[in-house]
Image (cartoon, rainbow, N blue to C red; front, top):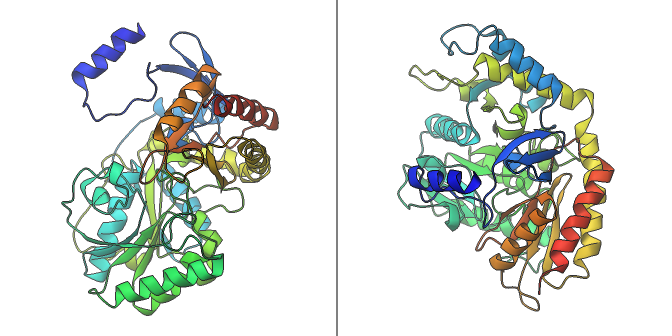
Length: 428
């Protein structure tokens, strides 16, 4: 059955639509932190549909909200008043930290970032955008044009002029040997120098923790320091919170709050976890920025009733059960457990991350050279042991990505760490 489905997949879908594993699996159902495949195998899910299943699989509160709303009306578009959309927008605006916030809902993180770029370039009347090296912001034409990761950028054509800034990766690049304060100072000097050689940019877009790039991040405070420079030039700051939002990092509700000295971003984009698998994305911005467009616009499927019902139920569950606190506590234990393992596995270069957003970077032992083959081997071994994880990375895909639902228990964290330890120790 699986082989037939794979053949059908290959005959009708694009060659570039990637599948994990030498023998791709079909996930048929899930519950809590576990999923099952079409052959009945059970897995502990440490990737959550690429960080989308934020609370739990088949969370009763969300499935009930979706079913009840679907029984009334699924969709009407933004041309009509939508109570669920207004209610979720009110909660997101209040949580965003942005004063006089307005919220626009989309169907994905890609579309959210695309909208943020439209707003910033229209507001600033500039098509120049600053982005971070090793970044990823989505699959659309404009999002690909600002992506600083060659593996996810299939064309150099773009409606934007993109200039790349240092700082998204702490332990690689020309400033890696510096201490944190010196690293930030060097990145700020680089930004100042860049601004002296270009026309005024519209915005800097940055992920507080780079997702596809392998869960890399700068020292706390870098974007606050950037913000001071950007503000002096009138340049907007867009924080891409598609993967870092909603408390996943444990210490903060939004990733930008690790860089809060300069105040909140001008624009925040979000998606993935808020819908717990339902297709929700969105943009939060100050009213003067959100309202700067001088032509009509709608979103046919952004903010549709059934997805908004899911988002409201999911956000309520997240807050009432303090899943951010759970991510901090359980994620901290998991990171320390994996660091203890890494100390005994020569192929592990670094274990990094925050909360339940953890990266394990692999290199060829005794070198600093990325080892994508080792990452693929560990991915396969973890699956055989009953654990699903992800992978990513910059110059090469050699980082394992660990991002379970935020309701992960201590026992499940220990179980997953033991499976991953066995997989890592199986490397030659």
